[in-house]
Image (cartoon, rainbow, N blue to C red; front, side):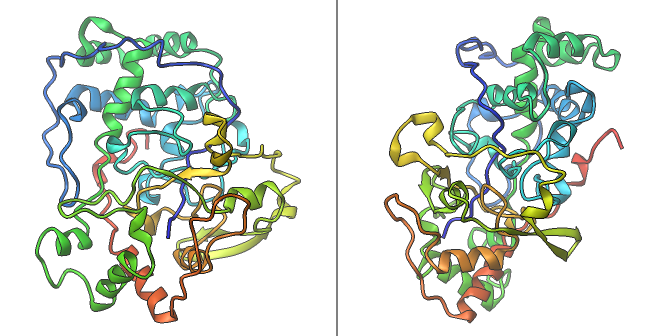
Length: 380
């Protein structure tokens, strides 16, 4: 079983940030000290270059919550990646961008992004600092016309005076320092030390209920979930980082996907909305062909990266297009073997009993970590 969550994809942006960012630009650490925090139980140690630096984290957090980074001063990173909603957004199936424009992917959760080897759910970026510029320049998301426009505007904000110098010394405000600051903050968004971690890695036998323990047996056994959502002996990121076709993107492309979505009005309160009824106030959404857009390899049509499952209870709706509203819906989807498609099948019917499905959902909910209150918006 694989639960798909994917970064929103706007229109293709023909820009190679890799060739612009200087190799080894920040290979030496600035005077600012590393953030004093321990990696949560259940996660692997961070490599030396991944450990966030205090002044860079504080600057990155300010940028992350700042609506002025959008061209019309109305949208921030944090408006789609809401901590109280699992660092995603629960209000709609797919993300809503600049001036209400529709994106074709669900906003992803950012937990444990520090460990990711490829970014976006089609794997088109491999560096977190470079990745930050895609939403900043996307006409559907933050709609800035150029890198220089963003740099010049931030240089003009009085409340940023001295902050870049404190974080990066003589480098000041630049394409590289903006991306690096945002990346440094995002590397602090670690989710671990859940009840599952306390049970598996903390030797607390009573941290999970018997139903949750049985759910873990299904997860690693009959359900075949851990084949892609991997669990190690010392840590678990719940992803192998690979790309698979489950049929969701294919069904949407041929017009056979779900025609009704559940929309949450309040915690636990959903209504069903027909897609046809939303056409009058929603812009047409571009087709999404998954990793094929990056590799041009036919086998990658409608393939998406395996997401991690930390705090998955909070990160609904699910799949890259937000087409499944609840964990129960997701388990049913994989129990049936996914959707029909014309690629090589990696999913097959599981034949789970109702008890096994219920316990599997209970286990998934044991992966929830308490919200970090310190990361709430400074602009409230």
